[in-house]
Amino acid sequence: MSIAKEIFADHLLAMYLHGSAVKDGLRPQSDVDVLTVIARPMTEAMRVELVSALMEVSGPHPASPGGPRCIEFMVFLKADLSEPAFPARSEFVYGEWLREHFEAGGIPEAHADPENTLILAQARQQAQPLLGPELDTILSEISSDQVRLAMREALPALLENLHGDERNVLLTLARMWRTASTNEFVSKDAAADWAISRLPDHVAETLAQARDAYLGKSRDDWADRPQEAQQAAAYLHREVSAQLHSE
Image (cartoon, rainbow, N blue to C red; front, side):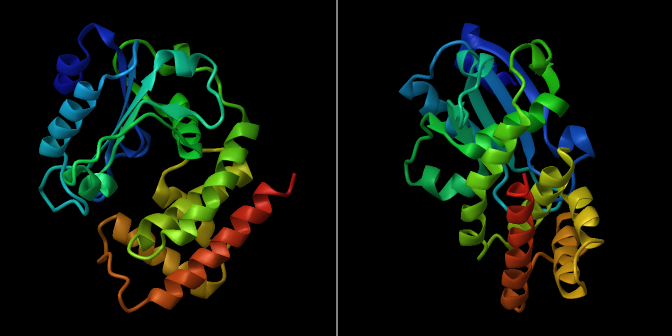
């Protein structure tokens, strides 16, 4: 919080903890998710300073036991939250999946993305204020139609990003399936438990491996199971797509 206060000063309106930390508790590989609301657009100097500061305090992915947590830090303009457009626009995003880009000198820019819509919809239900008012007093309600549209638009990229990110992709697909079926946002492991009971054995076994790796019960190693991961991802992708197009 001190980093944000120093960089944004009087422009800082609110900060929220969201994601696993407030839903079901941090898992061994959970990021610390922080959502920040500011009054005015960031300057280039602010972007450079914030990236530099976050790279110092955020642990690289995957998180080492006992080491610093990976941080996902998102900044939104208050004006963009009063009536969020689709897809929702973020002012700044920091995540450890972008560390190589940042180390090469890359700086986050404002960006509209369906993933922003999903993050805001979940945060509105679950976020815990660190500074400022409850999020639902700043962020207008995001309709279920927008949530479903966001999932439809975000879905194709998941299979493209499977290699090297098997655990996260499989668990994200399970969460999408659960949300598309029930309109609820739940943790990744809870979504996996829900999905496993509805899957054929060979897919359920692979998803269980992803869940257990997320919970720190097994190694997150897919080198000897690339085909199983691809088959499970394709199966889950079909289930999510069918659910999203069922109405």
